[in-house]
Amino acid sequence: MADQTLIVIPAFQEAERLGDVLAQIRRTVPDLPLLVIDDGSRDATAHIARAAGVAVVSHPFNLGYGAAIQTGYRYALRGGYRAVIQMDADGQHDPESLARIRARLAEGYDLVLGSRFLEAGSYRPPLARRLGMALFRSCAAVFVAVPISDVTTGYQGLSRRLMASYDREGAFPHDYPDANMLVRAARAGFRLTEVAVRMRSNPTGGSLHVGLKPLLYVFKMLFAIAVEGARPRRRREP
Amino acid sequence: MSAWLLIATGFALALLACRQASRGRLSSGHGVVWFAVGVLLFLAGVLLASGLLGDGDAGGGARAGDPAGPVRALIGVLTGACVLLFALGFAHAAALARIDERVKRLAQEVALLNAAQGVPPAMAADEERARDAPAAD
Image 1: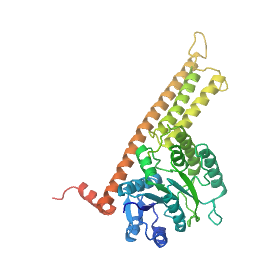
Image 2: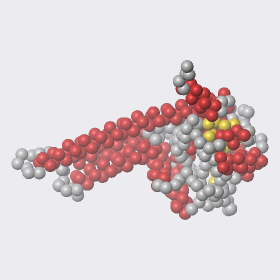
Image 3: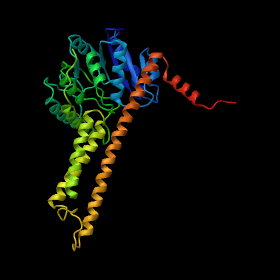
Image 4: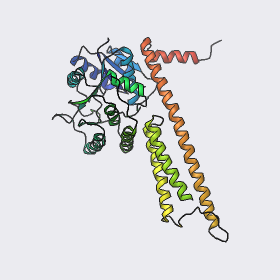
């Protein structure tokens, strides 16, 4: 198990699509172990994952997306995994792009971000979301030297030492760890890069950001980026 | 005096919200709300001090022979009470955030422990219910 890459899939009420998503990933990368974090779902999400022969960690109640991937990092750290690639459970992230992220992790990068904007043919979010992303990108660019086109991507790979750093430092956001965590990793001196990935639109049209949430999300994320920028700089351990 | 009290409190709240959030003692959600409250108090203080909200420094206190004195004193007392409430609210939010963080950490550890022991969540919940149920005679 050690010295391997683990695929972490946070899932909440995804019983409808999870089976297909897991089957697709299995077909594409049969050698990589999978972990589903069931974030307190009340449907058959955990059951479906377990039936597919995948390791499952079930939160006793809904803790949020950020907490789910943090649980995945802890599982990977304790299991001795070398790296983690996180993917959404709704099928938006095309498993065909896994190999690119994996290759960059093997080159020694600590954070490999999958960008939907580097390649034609990938899903493009609506204009309002693209404007929001541009705003976050501009703010994050103040702290991140490497140009990043997709700062809110959830399709990313992390090295063990980056996960250990997040775990050691605490204050990991339980809701949306996006551009703010990118800023934290860059300021700590971790190696960042970006690769082109294919993303599909959400089949149900659903999103984490519905109703008035997008407005609050924009304020929270701008605040979180500013706060990360103001934190005392902690260098990564070699 | 009310205006300066609002300005000082607003500034302190906004600063504290950033500081506590950057140390992980306040979630970014709570942080952004308290930062906004601080900014609003600060702006209210500035407007009051500039006289745009009426009679300049409204909390100047009751002066002898001044017919508006009791009103000013009342505004001053109310401003002080509001500031105190905001400060208590902030302290309460910070305490809740700490508890929330610990509860979530505990829930994650329980989930990881169950997974390590191979206990399916439904079984874990059943065991918990069985433990909590009153013993049958």
